[in-house]
Length: 317
Image (cartoon, rainbow, N blue to C red; front, side, top):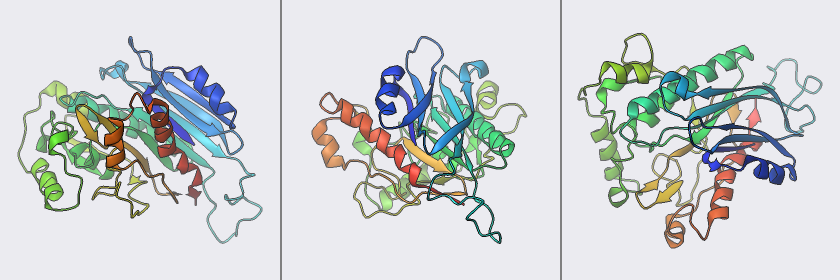
């Protein structure tokens, strides 16, 4: 399975023709507004079939021109690594034959944590609803969340709820809290201290409009996560020097103003990632001068493809 997020897909037809040669088919959704790029989800036609597709246009909710994709895929019965009715032990529960795949590229602007949270909230709520409609199917969520592993926004994805008043909306993604010159990549006191500083118990002022954008209707300030999600990378230990103390890749984005991780693969119970593709070491990225770079434009896009495609080796149970 391959998932591409926005800013990477502005020539979908050309990309679809290229991937079709390897047996992939896919769907595309462009951003609203004047932007000409968008997101895409591809899957092996012999391994999955598309049962349902829908999109979220955040513009309809006052949350900018970003979009998200949802696809319900069914595992084809001819896959040797998936149990079927004929060969399954009747005493064991049948494996799920469907999976709900989500794809998102969250707003970049570090100052608008309210919009970032609102975009993710709507995707999680819709993913949960679609999962229930398809027999509580497991979910996989991929994308550029424009937030670092030390951030409150990352915490929201991995925890049941988040009290937004404990955080400054302008720093909730951690993008400005961890600039390139102050970023620590090693395990130690610095990383722990940074997380503590970001989560210190101080109440910050949010306007009524900002609270509404972040949590929706209801007037509460506790943002609920209806899904219990796990990070695919954290679930697959590695001895590589390309991981941080959280278990996430050290770098998935590198340019003049930022070096760090903002791209993630999340999954619910019912899916077991058995392998992930490691990202490039920092020393290699520094030689390239960025990701993507003029020298490695094509290779950088391939790296982002590989960052997702190993999810085809997941085991459904």
